[in-house]
Length: 77
Image 1 (tube, rainbow, N blue to C red):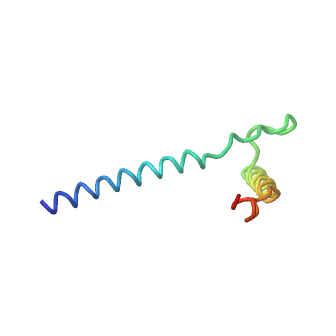
Image 2: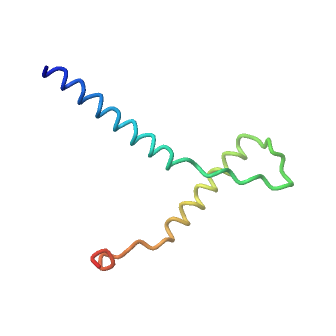
Image 3: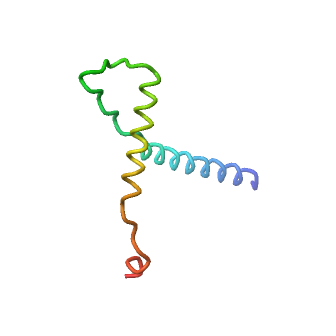
């Protein structure tokens, strides 16, 4: 009996973890890539694509760093 409860508990915990992972993965999906300018071919070399991705990530991080975080006084109110 005790083993059955342990097994049921384990299945419930695994289901909860699976749901949390699914929810987190949906929240972390990367936004659609920006289309390449008309002058460049859609194929581009791997190096160019890598540099574009690096630049996009850098711009996104800089934009996130510019956002103000709430001060402790605002959180207390």
